Amino acid sequence: MRFCFISNYAEKIIPALQSRCIRFKFKRIPFELAKPRIQQICSRENILINEDAVKAAFNLCEGDMRRVVNMLQSLSLSLSLDRR
Image (cartoon, rainbow, N blue to C red):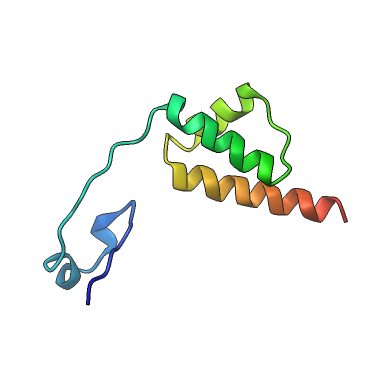
């Protein structure tokens, strides 16, 4: 059986598990690659967003797409609650 752990803080994984794992480090993707994906997510979630806001979201999350997606999910949920 194989598992994949994804973490921003590998040191929070207990040493017994760390000793049995192989670490892979991934670079943050450039804004030019993230921008179309962020716009696609916003479009599907009915979030109106301009290019400056897309760039701000990306910079705020320091290029971490998981954080960007989580932030957009929270925004989408917040907007859907406001629309009720």
